[in-house]
Image 1 (cartoon, rainbow, N blue to C red):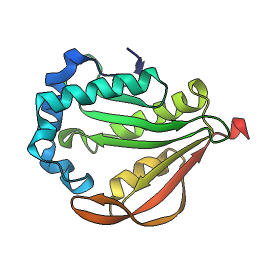
Image 2 (image 1 turned 135 degrees about the vertical axis):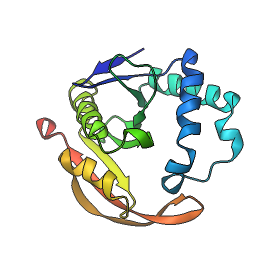
Image 3 (image 1 turned 60 degrees about the vertical axis):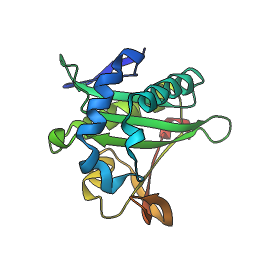
Image 4 (image 1 turned 180 degrees about the vertical axis):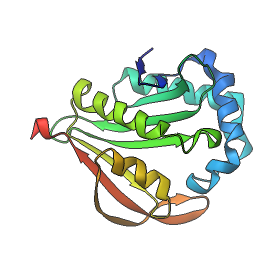
Length: 182
């Protein structure tokens, strides 16, 4: 298990004993996160599906293809967010995609901005990536502020990029480069 800390948060990889905690986070935020995610049926929230998700995350982490970290406030067990570096590609690319989600009750406190800063540090210093890409629906102003506060720059819009909540959505493309590798 990988663990990291920020001033107020603990960020760690998930383990199978976390299944109930992860399920509670997902169920609790189903309506809140719905407008920003693909359509999810009831099976997505089942213990069986969550166990498969945890097993897949453990596998991808062991293959160094993904780093998915779950956020808790220091000293607490309740999951309040998730941040993932996915599709980690080595070779001449040295890049990944950044994705994250926050518990509704934990929004507006700067937690995700703090977590993204830590994950950028991990991506650039530990994993030694050159480029992190974040794709965000233009109407998701809070999410755009998170990446901007962390130094990401706007590269353009990808039309009909992802099917979110049953509808093809444009996504603004934000990037952060590891200047030490330039």
